[in-house]
Length: 288
Image (tube, rainbow, N blue to C red; front, side, top):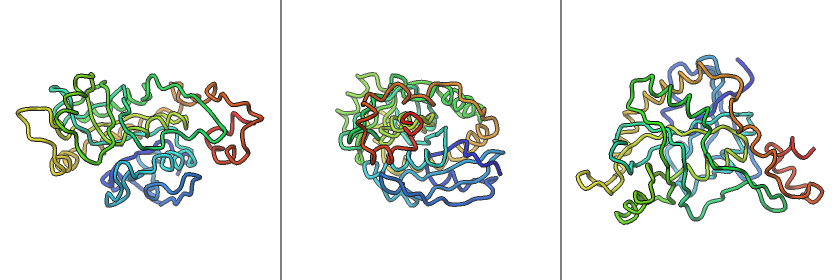
């Protein structure tokens, strides 16, 4: 088995129970930010070593706000992961993004309120660029892989992340539409921004499960709707991941791998040693 873990998938259990996943092992990782949501499942899949992490924990035990996003991303960084595909349920704020469709968004709006959004602070300040929050190279590969399954797929759109765990009111949903948002979910932020700080490529396979609550001719979103669509789309997600794992290029054709290079503004001599040690996996190469 190759040593390098080429790709990580953050999503549900249906993605790490896939046929063809061999030499499976669980990694129990400790981070400076606490434990991740679940042990990481690592296996060989289509010629690549792939890691799988259940965002909400197996059995879906964590609300979107309870997920320890920093620990999850830092865990994958410690394992040497360079690319993450997030598999997420979402609501559609556009007529043409219908339930059952899959969208690879290209923009993100953070409307959460109480989450830890950065690895930095406590004596180490970095201002990381996030104008394009999703890796364009990985997103393009993901879109091609989803299209190849025959699924209805769309490329582009702004994804708004709300705090949850409740669904939107009609007033909120209509407001988000008036802002030009395309999709609504509860977990992509701060996950995408933390991945950027960790210099990991990040793309989202967003599974549209409903029209949120704005659509006058459709029933408001329910948990049953979400589960039904996700269950139906699990095979599509598995096929797309298999395709990407089999064709993944070793080199990264993007700038994600150097996102921190010019972002650290703190005088190196004034960075506390404990902070250097905590963030060694992310900033170690820049603080030598």
